Length: 343
Image (tube, rainbow, N blue to C red; front, side):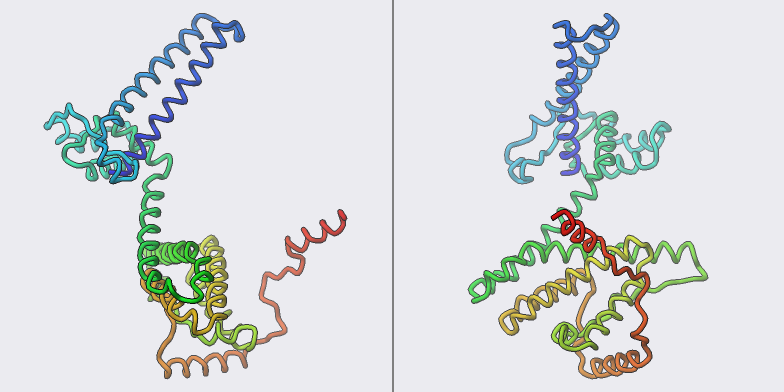
């Protein structure tokens, strides 16, 4: 229902803007600032009349929203229409399906809106299509869904971290309280996108199937010994490359590089606080496991086995060769060089 409210607010604002533009044009015409024909003036007047009528229609619906429901949905309104004809709305889906002037996306969105509306809330056909078009044009459905997901993750994170508010280093962790839920959501969306891309690939390429059983597990000592042990760098590099190999599109690879960098920065930051960060770090890790299937290897036998694999792999690597593509002249280096020259 909140999707329809978003769209209704958008329609009101759009018609307000149209009215303002038409009034401005009429004032300029009447003052003699603009010299136009009588036909052009009549066209502006007609546009003002139409936008005013549209505005009043949607504003009336907006004003009928109960105050308690405005509060409940944080100023997102429940739209009510008093003059509902039962038979008309029962046949509405059938009419939508038979409407040859609508494309498939418009019809599907209209169907979804009808399914979301309470029984006592109705749009007529034109209003329904206006709302559907607004939702499609402004990508409202995806935006609202992401906002709801982020709020759910934030609420869970806050509830779990509230238990450590009296911790001596809580002020230090406050810097991450906002950022970590966003990062968890980004990981969740990344995994969902990978799964969707792989499923789509498998449907289109039955002889070249890809499989996704979740992300490979990482090891805590890679973060613990980063900047101390070159094997830690190598292990993280290989682990990151395995996940990159799951990416189907170049955009997914770019997103993964950013996620990996941000995740590693937070893990290293928390790791520097040692025992003082264990509870907080565990909450971060546990929520990544829940929302993104990303977890650390805990079994000692598996850890020993993985260490042997790393040792064997390192012996086969040629560290004299740079990973391609490789460019020593980075864009930031060019920026600093230009600043130095300008001085």
